[in-house]
Length: 217
Image (cartoon, rainbow, N blue to C red):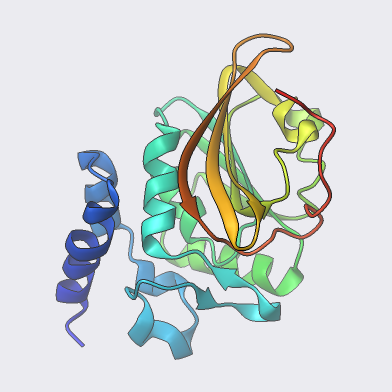
């Protein structure tokens, strides 16, 4: 397989047609080596338009979904980011290239360990993997400029929304199969949030996020 041709095809045939047009995101996808974050037996499928299997029955988001979430989040270089659901560490690597600091929480030990190794091999120094339950987030280290849920939830989680700065954004895939939608919530004040529905997709459910939140917009 010609790796660079496959990467180019992924960007031009999958990601760009999915309304990912931000030059900084497109160039980042050419730099961060996705094939280094997929399981060894899936390397031939690293650039395929599909979710890939990870340890402990989990799945890696498809390239176009990761790219679109990254674009819609609109990170800036000075920002601190919290990610829930590390998976292989690929999304954390992408976030780390755009932000000052990334803390990523993964409840499954095998995934957390592998993600640490993947990020070390990729020389990503500003993303920290912690083996932890992401449902509560990190209230003692809040507030964050951005929170990314790399998987789906039943509803936007109140505990995580509360950990955003004013002006901070949380992005997640919300709903139940077969109907889910990526949603961007921006904190406008102590109790004021703006919600924008972005695009339809489906993603694996994050551990512990199946029950609805009490939060209402």
